Length: 338
Image 1 (cartoon, one colour):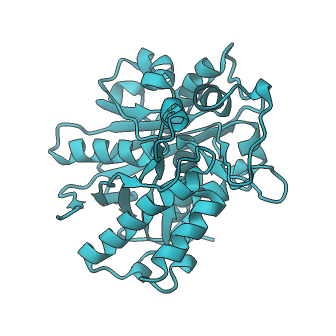
Image 2 (cartoon, helix red, strand yellow):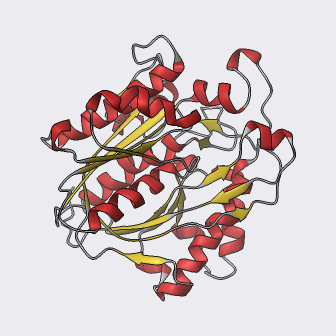
Image 3 (cartoon, helix red, strand yellow):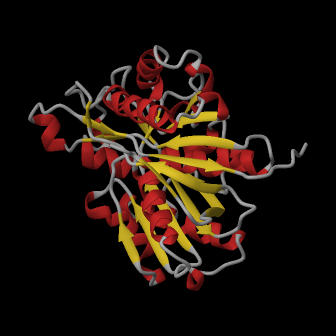
C-alpha cells in the first residue's frame, strides 16, 4: 500500500505566526513568538473564549505579515482540542471564510496542512488558504482530566498542555517553504491505557510513519536537516529513537521534538515536555520555518503526533491509539544569512 502522496502544484507556506501564553513566553522560543499574553486570557472571560481569541490573533498576525486580509482567504482549515472544535468556531467564525474543521488530537496541525494543501493542489481555484491550530492548558485540562483548581498530582511521564496557537497562510510562491508531499498516518495501538503517558502511546505511530516513509520513498534520512515530531516529550522521544535507530542508525542525531523545544526542562516544570496541538503548530511557526527562510536549513520531515483518546475511553481502560501524519517541507533555493 502506497502512503506517500506527492503534490503536483506549488503549495507553499507564505506566512506564519505563533501566539502563546505565559509559560511559552518564558521558554527557549519565547522571544520568537509573534505575541504572548502572560495572563493566558487574551482579554476574555473564560479559557474557552481565550483559546478562540488566541487562534484569531495568530491568523490575523499571519495575514498581516503576508500583506493580506481575511477577504483574500478562500478556505480555512482549523481545529483544536475542545469538543466539536468549539475554540476554533468561537475565534474564527466572524471571518466568514469557507471552513473545514479537523481533529486529530495533537496531530491536528499537520492534519490541517495536509487537508488544505491537498485541496489547493487540485487546481488553481484557491489562491490563498489558511490553517490554524490551537490548544489552551486550562481548557484542555478541564476537558480531558480535571480543572487546575483540583490540584491533582502529575507523574513524571505527564506532559504540560501548551497554551499556544500556530497559523499558516498557504499560497503559490515558489520561493517560500513548499509542502511537496505527505504521508497520512495510521492509527497504531499505543499499548498503554495510561492517559498521563501520551508520549509512549504516540511513539509507535511516529515510528510506523517514519519507517514507512523511508521504506517507500527510498530517500536517505540524511537528506533532511531534521525529522521533527510533534510532542512525544522525553518518554515518547526515547521510545521512538530506540525503535527507529535499529533501522536507521544515527536517527537520534536527526530527530527533534517540539514537545522538548517549547519549554526549558531545567527552569520550567513541564515534566516530560509539552503537549497539545498548539505545540507543534507554534514551534513550526516560530522555529523551523524561520530557520528555513533564513537559509539555515533546506528540508525537513514534519509530523504532529496525536493520542486518540477521550476521558471516557481512558476510564474504561481502552488502549490509547496514536497517529502521526507527516509532511515534507522544503525550500528549493536558499541563501544563508548571518
